Image (cartoon, one colour):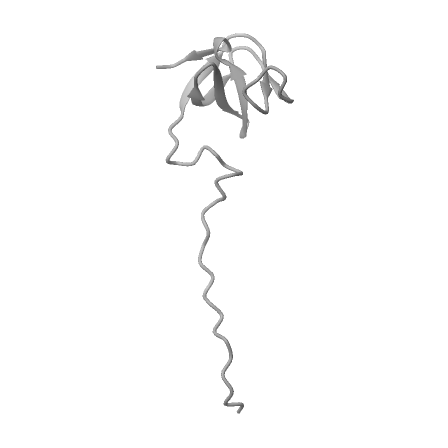
Length: 90
């Protein structure tokens, strides 16, 4: 048998899901909100941001944060809608 030493290969550790692809991690509380009127969900919190999808009226979404624009999760996708389109369930 060869007696030369080889580099140890570290045991693979399970990695938590990447925060970037799932910003609504367990440490980020969300609450439900209802969409009042059909609204375009955007990639960023500004009117000129790229449109991602349209959320129909009366849809329930998860609200991550809400200032002038609300960050929401709809069908697993994160995006932004203007605050006046969301009724909070608080």
